[in-house]
Image (cartoon, rainbow over all chains, first blue to last red; front, side, top):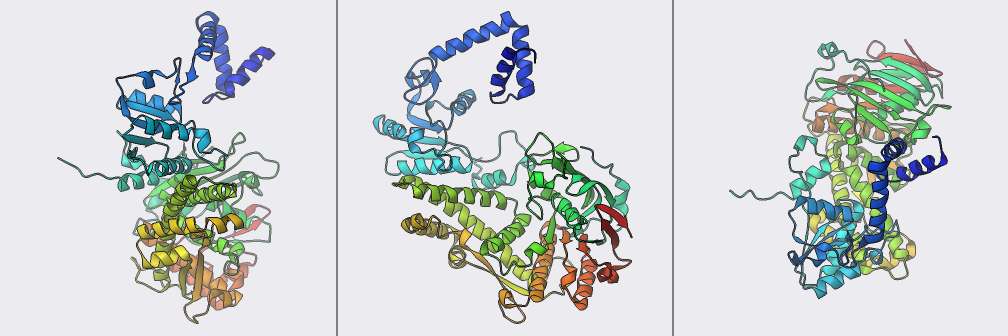
Length: 199
Length: 397
């Protein structure tokens, strides 16, 4: 590296998910080579995003308005809330274009080992929403990890006394997937969650 | 990393023909900077392999290299850095393994820039060790296991879980998940006022995973008990010359599974965990679950507990269990695992030694035996491949 500025930029970029030391150096080079068309617009876009984008006070989504566009929309099913771990999970659901309800982003998973408790995940806020907004169904879209499943159990426990249906996403064979390539845990989950074939 | 060129013509040789319980066998193996080996290249066939040499020559290291080609952490459960030769940063074990009708090239090792063990099958990196189970399996007996019956229940559970893992790929994930959830519960109980909903969620997870673990162990113990009692096997495997042992699981969850369906056992375990919160909080542990179980081994001939038997008898019982496990895997998976017996022969009298050799040859498993004294293996002359190990160099006899 030729200068401290370039070093510093590469080190910062290397902290981003998905970028290692080599790819961050390539990114720095691309930004400096394409200063006008890429570097400067990126700086402006970053500044604008930092100034305007905030976490939604209702669901935890990121947006430039609060409540976010999804929470403010009257076209969405307001009696169904899908609970997910991170904003990127919300984005994934939106890309699928098959869910029309509201969201609640926890921002993590329960983990006594990592000192993440219910108060860190805004679960009381979720409970308050469910009761205040007459929610009929809560869909737990949490990862099939130890902590993800404990979190799902926890929320289901908390909702046990309320008149609300609690469901979770199915675990099993991905669409377009071949059984041969699935691991044993996924196959076992798929077998347990088998469904009657209706013709 | 390089893999061996695979000679497909080898498949027509006797000993690796596919049958219901064809033996898995190392055909070629290459070590680079592994333990005390700088470089080693060895070719073997399906017959037993005898490694003799002084203590510290590198015999057990060779067995460890083979054990790392199967799922798990190998015979010593060593860290990646421990496996690196002194002064080195990387190591590699590459092998061509005959498995059923195929020859498969496998490499495992460590790259200098990674803390994860690299595994390549036919030159393609794999993310999961469990993929090795499709064509490679090994079982072993090492001097560290000699005191298994006198050791702690935790050591016996580890031994048992290794046997379960060999026939149930999901077991390792279940045990890891259960142990993490146990730690979560202990940490939560340490809090002044733990969230009862959180505790209940954790206890539900513990019960689900715990009963699944206990059921998998129970299934394995019953199957092994059947093989040890001489139950008819799926093929014409020879009868083990070692004393028959009766195996049983002892523990609260194991007793529950004896008398009720798993769903009820799960519900009961949830209740027990909830009732024990105060006591567990004081003790800093969890008083119910499969982590409290123990494996009991009884000498079927005398009816005595293994712990009350002589050291030699204990070794014979243990050897009988390991060989029974190999047969069980052959029945279940259609392939005989590689058997690694480290310093086993020195503890057996001449009659038992000859019986063991006859049995291993009749069983047809590729067995690797180590010992300091070559004369102890004399009855295998002509029926086995002999190597002398000296300062990490192998000399074929």
